[in-house]
Length: 343
Ligand code: TLP
Figure 1 (tube, rainbow, N blue to C red):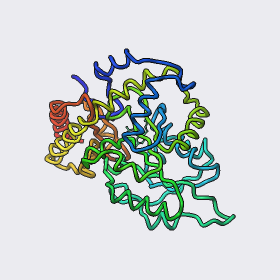
Figure 2: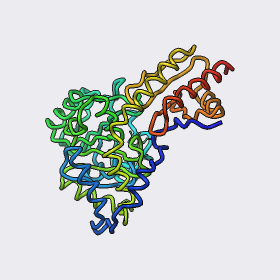
Figure 3: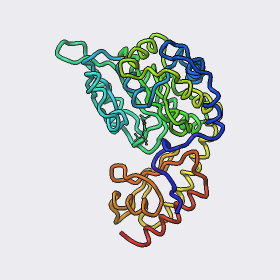
């Protein structure tokens, strides 16, 4: 039985054309600034996100950590929504490596920060308090269900940050899913953040890599932090070539992933006991089934060749390049059988 891999959009494999682009990449030593393909990717990414400069990094986790280290002095406090990826899935790097405090605030069902709480969390300048150094947001928001924050949502965060002279970092691992969903260029969303990380290795189908974007001054500091973290890579044009291909060819097709997630959601919603939590907005789909513990359902689905994870008591399916409509139909058929067999 062929497995249908819905564990994550990180499982995508490079297309033949992307592999060709990798094979043909012109290379140099990027630590010396001499890899022309990396430089081209960085210029493209900066332009697409409306920033002055960009930096290729190894992963979203590394990009987010570098951003926090570059914005904040040791001992500062980062204001961030509870349940955000930086808090839950990045190994506590900001505490461990940066000596930063992460101060969580409530988020609503879409993953939007509770701005009243943010306001109350920003520290006055007083020697008793840590300094507030940064506000972080996540778009699309993973745990909230791949939810999208629009320009109005983001402008409200920006306005508050400006009032207090604070920078904003956007974990935009899936920012192109948000931009495709809203039908606006990514730069219309990232304009509200000082820095943004986006991932090449998720829906855009690259094997490795993320890009951190911001002002020239910020990227200068970020480059230093990347080196500190051992992220200075040499002939990284191998990675960047895939990234260039992806920015040119893999963004528009994200709409197929969103349609497939919606199709999967429709199919699941018709099965007894299934609750979508919530219905998908982009390519992430979470659900629960009455009478089933999520870890048990995960095991049964995996055994039936529907690869997915129990993410904190909900099953998560992720649609991506390489998953077609027929795969979703097959995953639905297998799921129906698993549920019919009973817990
Ligand atoms: N998310 C992965 C896992 O780590 C859970 C996934 O399968 O969804 N920000 C967000 C919003 C993310 O979802 C992820 C990866 C990252 C950052 C980190 O990216 P990587 O995996 O490149 O370090």
